[in-house]
Amino acid sequence: MVYAMDTEVTCKIFSDERSRESDLVTNELKKLEKKLSRFVKKSEVCKINSNAGKKPVKVSRDTFELLAESKRYSELSGGLFDISIAPLMNLWDYKNSLSVPENDRIEKTVSLVNYMDLILNERKQTVMLRKPGQAIDLGAIGKGFAADRCTALLKNKGIDSAFISIGGSVSLIGRKPGGSLWSVGIRHPRKTGELIGVLQSESKHIVTSGDYERFFIDKNGRCWHHILNPKTGYPMNSGIASVTVVAHSAVQADALSTIIFLSGIGEVHRYIEQFADIQIIIIDEKSNIYITQGLKDFFSSVQNSEICIIGGRKDDEKN
Image (cartoon, rainbow, N blue to C red):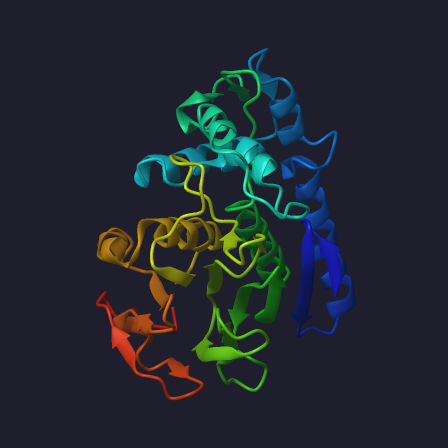
């Protein structure tokens, strides 16, 4: 296990040269972190943030492509997914705070959050934020981008069986060496250290967004989680405790897990229809389980809880 992309990373690579290939994954993650992390002083994202409202910043193709993809998901979600949310994340300060920011400060900060103020110049490969004080945070999509890059790297080396976990987001290459499917535990959002279900899968990316990942409890005993509604500045109360998206693309799974959490279970059919190859597991605030049709034969509840099928197409898990 190593630490990269501001999180714990675990790799299980089945190869005669797995030590060298594990190093390739670690090096790739650290290289991307130096471009994409807003907490690395000389990163490209940090340079964009420090030059907000001042001037465009020339960036690498990796950074430009990820920012362009992020903007597309912002448009898709009507602004619920917004990587310019960094000022709000700073205000709430989940690592250190035990109190809710004052409402007037939240309202003032919300005015800085607007994905349409992210100006991308494809010809010059430059990026600029329109207003001073604006800032990018790629926490809702950056790990997915990194996972896609790492799995592609291993496949190019001929690896046909591997498991990569980046902060709990899982990427699978092929099946286990014996030919069986991988078993991926889905965390219970209300019982620390327990699973609510197990997913059998292969060659997919499995990403979860949940209200239990980062939070604080205020003096009145109320829990405030970290998935913020960029339009109100407050944690989203959508009735969902966690969303797991299973997809062929980790970027897609990463972004959509956040979008569906913010949108609520009533909007999930919209994304099932638009992305026919994804599958979804939703746990609501009462720990009820909802899955798409394609996972019916691959997901099981640990405690034999009732599972509700919410529709969608059954794709071939072997693809």
